Image 1 (tube, rainbow, N blue to C red):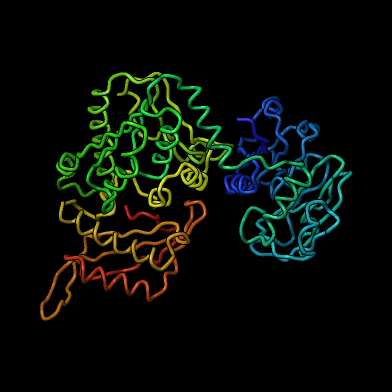
Image 2: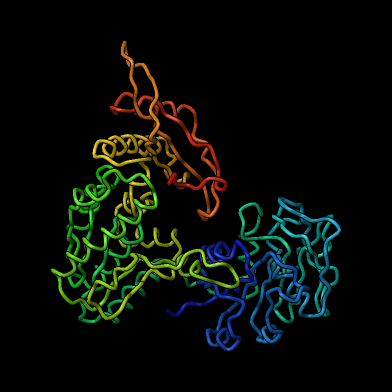
Length: 510
């Protein structure tokens, strides 16, 4: 894909993906690569700019991530952030040492507005700091362009060499003018045109799939989630009815979800196969209470069901997966530990007769996938669907799973999500759902004593799903949700709201 490219070189920073997302938000295409990437490969990609990420190490220690000095002689603009700024100073002959006073959090920074980087922001503003080392002497040819009370070099630059560095993190929301600073680097320093847009990407991706697949047939396991739904829409536009989507309904979806997925795709130019396997899954899950066992059983049974349906289709040329860019990065980047070895539907290719896997979304972040879905005309209820685990409600029902519990949770969860939407909170809360606990307690309904289930509500705000805070839902909304659920859903007499963050808790309960 022929777009202007900015490369984010990852030195182990926790914000590597966030930097790339911020750059793309400014209409410049960006990829994250390891600092170990050979210089020859970087040159071959012809980037218009390079960004060094932060990282937890000290640049003067022998085992710390580093890079060859040759990269500074490529005549490609470079922006160093946090550890990246210190690394630039260290390699080019400056001095980095432990700071007399560490800086963490929001910090007032004074900027030199004659710099190309800071001409469009106020002389003083708040930026997010997170460092224990600092630059004490800038390399020859550099000048200081920002400082704080505790940090004499909060930014430095060598305009002649197109080298820029900031000690703070412009990519995080806590830095007041972070986006403006990144924009200045991209447009004032790198001279980018800003040719990355979802409309352009959609056209390019459709043409690329059409060219690759030719007259071949494509098979997709359609879960009904955002990624697979957007992928189905993209493939349909590219190859039409040479695409077959198999939608395995395991009976553990949210209320009306199976029908919504079918309605979204039944009139599109593709072959849509819906398999009602709810009884098959429920029988396999009978008396199973351990969450990992639930996951394993559902994963294995999904493969068996999919295999049975795929055999009816026969040979296909391509198997499509909804892999997205965070999956690619999390499969191993830089010196970071492998978070997950990504495989969208574990094991499926071993049971499907195909010649190649295609992953048309692998360059996109989740928010970009949603924008692509809008560009392709998918309905809002699919594009903005809440994240949903593959095992579905099986891991939102604590303890054993019964048909009755599934219906109870579907109804309660539906009310919660409906009221969140009515309150206009559905785009500001990143994930929200109900959990049916195994705890039962005494209650009073009219003149009668009850002994029914306790329902937990979970709602979080997050930028990356690696950390999350509980959402501050207004009390009147929670009150309405609680009243509706206990009055409309039989079997529940107590509602709790989960106010723990991640960490220490996870977002899901199981």
